[in-house]
Length: 452
Ligand code: GDP
Image (cartoon, rainbow, N blue to C red; front, side):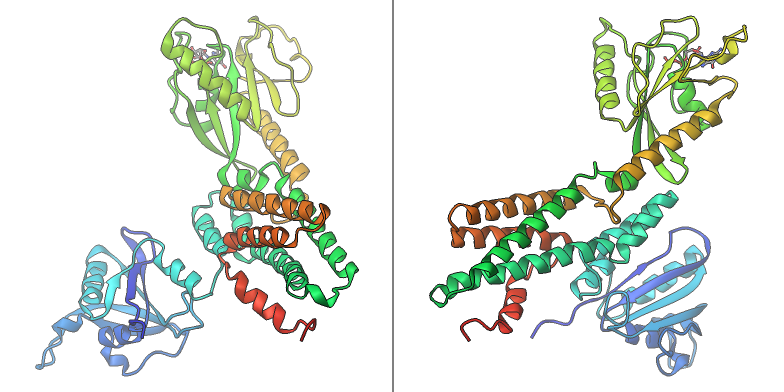
């Protein structure tokens, strides 16, 4: 018999002083922990109902009736399986002070069968108990990390199963086709109608096309999650670091009169209309003999090339920009405070002053519009993929599908085709964490009528 799992506990709210702190306990001894700490309750609180309870340190309760009060708390009781982890879960909402928390944690540690939770252990148990698939687990992490509204919305959709539904749906379709393919091997004698085999190939092709479309989204979901990259480019001393500082409203880059002082890549996170973006300042783009500066220039070119948007800066009276404005490049003339005459900004150029702040809101508006455009172009499909992990698995799945389709075309090598389909299904299953292809096949074969 499997050993009883440990009952785990951890502070679920942020560490530090706060109005309240929440300590979560999960496992078979969670109920015991509630009664050991709150003996006056007499029995477990009603499920999911906040119940006031006085907590005492169990080790302090003496025969004479003396006891050490930890806190007056709220206790919540979630009997499994209708809980976050699927196990019995209890939550203690205590006053969020160090001494209170320490005392509760010490008491929980002293109870038999209880142990502090490792990182991600509550979510891991939720996954292992079938409460969540892996994409939902990842979405919880994304939601906790979300800093902008687009990140939050995307994480919530994923947590709600938007990706799981898509990938599991594909996997089910694929496994059905596998069932046909395997049947035609196992029952080769018994005439599987030709058009059944043909339908199965058509289904594979349709699936491969859908995966193609999903993969061809230019990583928009990953951008929403990780932030769009915006590179500042332009000759030394045009004011890139100054603009970065002005946008970040804090001093992160060194601003100096000596050309070429920004030798490394400096990043500032921005929230552009709900989209997370990272503004990257790069060393001035100019040729130099200085080895460190050359390295800076090389990195600058890489960063600029990889960015989703480039702000190319130049200054009045200086060299005209040597790049053209396009959908991925904004031309920005800095130091507008030095322009004395009333001359209009050149066409297609945004004129700003990093020093006075003039034009910055127009620039921010334009940056936001460009990012919105990229999102609306590419995210036509709902629920874009959000992680490199998913992309890798999908690419593997697609490659295997294409191989399977090719073997079908080349005189139907059914064994190879079945094997490739299996690889494809496993790759899909890895995304959500459902890898039990055999079990699914069994289920499908059970109500398969051929050869019964
Ligand atoms: P970078 O090499 O492109 O990063 O340029 P910096 O940000 O280091 O700026 C170079 C010089 O231009 C500094 O002396 C800044 O104070 C100055 N500067 C930057 N922006 C402006 C501006 O809008 N107006 C004026 N007058 N000077 C500026």
